[in-house]
Amino acid sequence: MFDNWEDLEKSIIDCKKCKLCTGRQNIVFGTGNKNAKLMFIGEGPGADEDRLGEPFVGRAGKLMNLAFKAIGLNREEVYIANIVKCRPPGNRNPEEDECEACMNYLRNQVILVKPEIIVLLGSVALKHILGKEYGITASRGKWVEKKGIKYMPTWHPAALLRDETKKIDFVNDLLLVMKELNNKSDSLT
Ligand code: URA
Ligand code: SF4
Image (cartoon, rainbow, N blue to C red):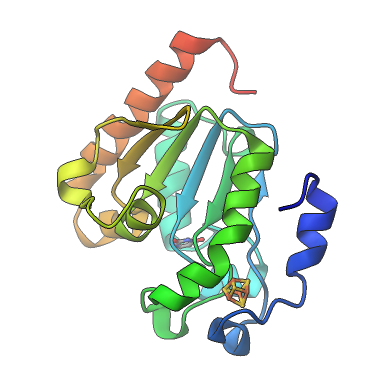
C-alpha cells in the first residue's frame, strides 16, 4: 500500500498483473476529487473509457451524468473508479482472477480518498467489495455499513440503458445518498 497518490499512480503505469493488460489502450485509473466524501465504484472500462483513459465517459457515463445533474450532484466533486482498470474484451464481465489481481489498487484508492460513502454500481462492484453473498436486486437502495464506511448498492448505469424502469430506482438511491451527505455536512468535500 502507498501512502500517497504519486507512488500509487506510478505503480500501475506498466501493470501486467492480469491478462487484461494485453488488450488495453489505456489504464483507466480513476478520476475526480481525491478528498471526496463520496466515491463511486463501477465494474471496468468499456471501449470509450479505454480510448480516453477515464471512467464513465461512454453511454452509461453520460446517463450517470444526467442523473447527477438531476439531483444536483457535481461530477467533479466525487471520486470515480472501477474494480478493474483495464478493459475486458468485448465488454464481458471481469473474471475472478482479474478482479483479484486489480483490487489492491482500488483498496489503496479508497484508503487515500477516505470517503464516508461509497456507491457500488452494479453486481460486480457489490460482490467484490461487500461479498459474494450480496445480490444487487435485493441489496440496492439499502445501506450497508462496514468498517466506518457507508455503502449504497445500486444498479449499474448500463442496466438503465437496457431497462428504463430502473432509472427511477437509480435516482432514488442517489437521493438517499444526498440526504445522508446533507445530514453530515453542507459540503461534499
Ligand atoms: N462501466 C463501468 O463499469 N465503468 C466504466 O468506467 C464505464 C462503464
Ligand atoms: Fe493490472 Fe488491473 Fe490492468 Fe489487470 S486490470 S493489468 S491488474 S491494472
